[in-house]
Image 1 (spheres, helix red, strand yellow):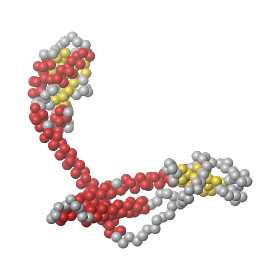
Image 2 (cartoon, rainbow, N blue to C red):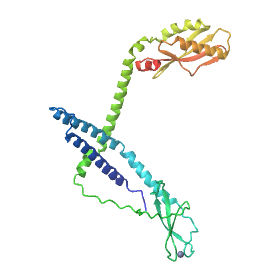
Image 3 (tube, rainbow, N blue to C red):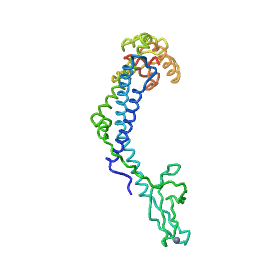
Image 4 (cartoon, rainbow, N blue to C red):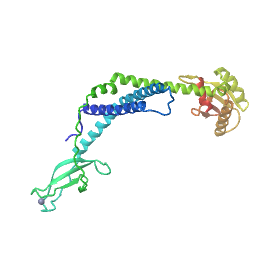
Length: 318
Ligand SMILES: [Zn+2]
C-alpha cells in the first residue's frame, strides 16, 4: 500500500479546496450585500451596495492570489508527509515471538498498516498476527512492541471516500479561483511591489517626522571632517591625524591614524580616543566604527563611516 500518489492528485485536491473556500467567501459577501443594513441611510443604499462590491473584489483578489502563492509549498508538504508514511511503513520491523493466547502457537505477522488515529495522532506501524491454526481473536502489535487493544467505541477503522457529487460549475469556478502560472506569478510580483512601496512610504514618513532633527545634523565632506576633527584631537594629545585610503562601496569608510603624545598606556589611550571621537562627532554625519581600531607603539588607528542620505542619517538619530 503506497501513500505517495502522483503529483496531479495533490494539485487537484488543492484546487478543490480553493474552489470551495473561494465560493464560501464570495457567498458571504453576496449575503452581506443583499441583507438589509439598518445603519445605511435612506438614499445611500446604492452606494452601500457598490462599496460592498468593491470590498468583495478586493478581498477575493487577495484570497485567490494567496491560494496560488501557497500552492507549491502546501503540495510539497503533503507529498513529503505521504512519502514519510511510505518510508515508515516500509522500514518497520514486526516483533517476533508472538503466541496465540488460545493454543500457544507462534503467530505470523501478515499485514501491516499505519495507525495514526490515536488520541495523540502519533503515526505508528501496526502489525496483525494470525494463528496458524486459525484461532480467534487475532492479535495486533505496534512495531515498538506495544499490543494494540481494540476499544469498543464503534470507531470505524476505515475511511469511506465521500462520494463526489456532480458539480456543473466546478470547471468554470476553477478557472476563476485557481490562477494559472502566469497570473499567479503576476500576483506575486504585485505583492512584492506593494511591499516595497509601503516600505518606501514608511521611510518617507520617518524622514518627514524627523525633518527638523535631520536638518540639524551637520554634513561634512572628508576634507571638512579632517579640519574639524584634527585640532580637537590635538588638544587632547592626539597629533598627526591622517586619513588612509578610503573604502568606497555602498557606504564610505575612512581609515585614519593618529599619534598619542601623552605618556598613557595602550588601554587608556584607546579608551580616551574612542570617547573623544564619539563626543566630537555627535552633531555631524560621521561615526567611529567599533571594529578595526588598534594601538601600536603610540600610534592609534580606526575607521570612520560617513552617513550621506536622509534614511542613513535617521539611523544616527535612533
Ligand atoms: Zn491458536
